Amino acid sequence: MAESIPHLLKTERPFSFAVIGDMHYGLPSPQTVPLRSAQSDRTLLERYNENVEYALEPMSEALMDEDLAFIVHTGDMTANESDPAESRAAIRFLRKLGVPVLFARGDKDDREGFTRDVLPLVSRAVGERVPQGYYTVEVAQCHFIFLDTTTWDPEG
Image (cartoon, rainbow, N blue to C red):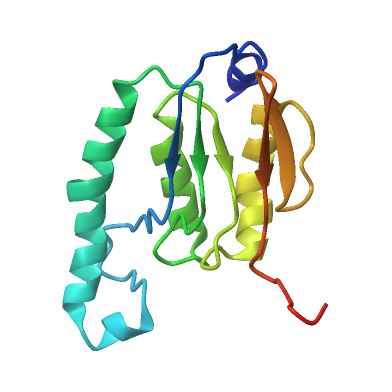
């Protein structure tokens, strides 16, 4: 991922980027149950695993055909947000696209896992430490704002 730092810094206008979200990446393991409701309906587990083969793999192939400067991921990266193995597998899936990925935390993304696994990737991509789930990035004089609204409190 170290190559991504100069990639972002050297990006000039015009540039293209992709926005993806709600991947709900799942591992094909029969022990992995991404939703509580999947315990009573095993077809839900099959649908999550098919998501990778029938939706995410073709999406990644289409994205690799594009000349992208980076990808913005809007959250909900994995099917089982508290499974570190699933998080690592989803990150490997995204890294094979060969461009930096900037992440926003989704409501299904575990805070601890996001801080541990995702923020270091964002930090490397932007070339400076990003310690929290909200940050801004300048790319070719365009200002991107990433918010973490998962703990938003209308009273506070």
